[in-house]
Length: 262
Image (tube, rainbow, N blue to C red; front, side, top):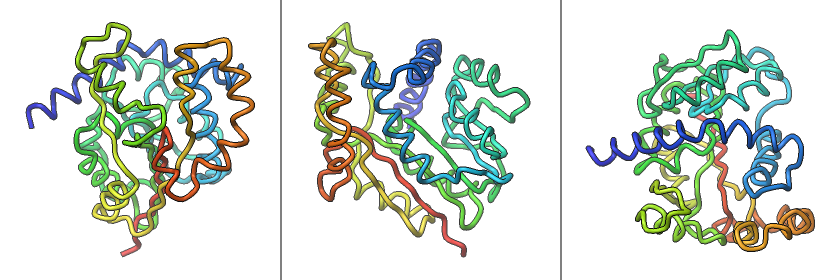
C-alpha cells in the first residue's frame, strides 16, 4: 500500500510540473491536430467522446475525474452539462479554475471521490488509469458516484501497443534515460478492463481502440515527416484500430461503461 501511495504522489508531482505544457498542448490541438502525436491522439479521442457523450447535455450532471487543466470541462459545459471536476494536482487545477469560473472543482484523490453516491449522470476520465498500480478502486468509486443508468467514458493504456510504450516506460522509470520521464505507468488489456468495470457494477462495458501505429517513433526520429504521415495514416487508422483483436495493439483504449439500474 505504501508503494501504491508513492506512485500516486509521483504522478501528481509530474503533472504539476507539466501543467503549463498541457495547457499549451490543448491550444496547439486547436491550431493543427497533426503537429504532434499527443494532439493527434486527442483528435482521435475526441471522435469517440463526441459519439459517446450527447451533443446537448440538457443539464445532466458530469464529473471529470482527473480533469487536469480543465479543457474537457469547458467544452462540456458549453454543451449544457452541469460539470464538476477533481484532480490531485493543484497546479493543474489553477488552469482549470481559470477557464471554468464558478464550477465545482476540487483537489482530491481519484480513489476517494468527495461526492455522495449516485451524484452524477456521466463520468469522464482521460489518462488517469495509466498512473494507478491497480485501477479497480478508482473504477469502483466511479461506479459509486454514478447514478443508476449513468455512463462512464474512461481511457486506459494498452499493454501491447504498437508504439512499444510499455518498454519505453520501463526504461524511463528506471531513470537511466535522461530524455524519458522517470514515472512508472501501468498497462492493461481489454479483458482486464471489462472484468474490472463489471466488478464495479457496470453491466454494459465496451472497450475500443482509439488510434494505433508506431507513429511515436516517427516523431522522435524523423519529425519533419510526422505531419504528412499522420494525414495519410488517419483514414487507415480509423478503419483498423478498433477491428477485433487489433484493438489490443492500439495506443489508447476508451472504455464506455453503463452502470446497472438495480
